[in-house]
Image (cartoon, rainbow, N blue to C red):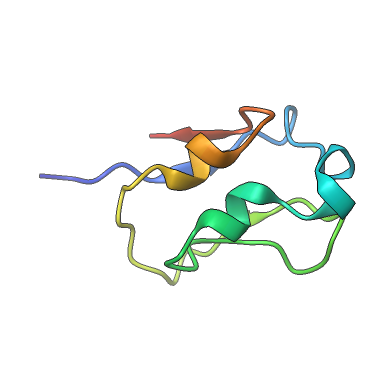
Length: 69
């Protein structure tokens, strides 16, 4: 069974609206699938990581900018 993977909706993602520009979704990702290099930068999906499909990142994003596909 295939697991769902996260996708960032960059039209909804506005890191400047997050606390000190730190992405809550990236902080919540314990597997390193979603990473934010620097505050106020949009997070990116790390294609080198194996997807766990937990959806914690999508649940943590207050802007609903992370979707599971």
